[in-house]
Image (cartoon, rainbow, N blue to C red; front, top):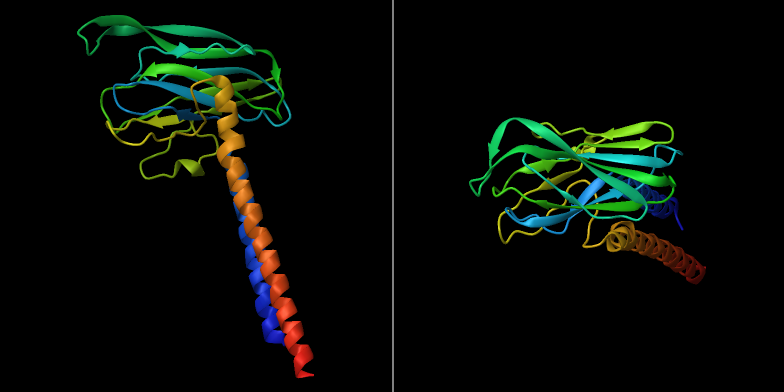
Length: 242
């Protein structure tokens, strides 16, 4: 093999390795946030929002998750999780709020607080599900600032992107859901979901992320086989020329 061919082969291998490293970093980052995955996002519909808790605060286990509801929502029904106790916090409104059905309310549910019966191992994940009635207007993005308390420290997932800002650039983005028009595909915010807590836990990391890892490994393996074939081909040609 001449030097030019060797440089090309090494360059291709280096690029492939760099791409693989970036993909691995991206997959790790994508699973790092407390995020939401709704089972539906259609305006004026009832949706199940699954909040994924993917890790603790560094090496400290999660003890509490305080989910703040956006002002567009008046209530939420938390799903029972055997690992947590749950409390609904109500807020008295400064003035009565008229609902779409013509009735008025003076109080709303402002927070859902899940408290772990035992600290959640920082290397394990869990999923917490809320049932909510989405607003009747499509095009809105609902943000759910969420405070994660741990045995040591806390993380406030409360950053909201400014106009034109990529939410993935935020260090601690607030979980969010975009309300869509009837017939539109369900969008996702920053987290993971399904109809039950157990299903949600398997859908998030073990589903799509597992497929991503499988694709990455297959791609790297293919590059390795291609490189090996290239070198064998060059060696065979060199032998014949002799």
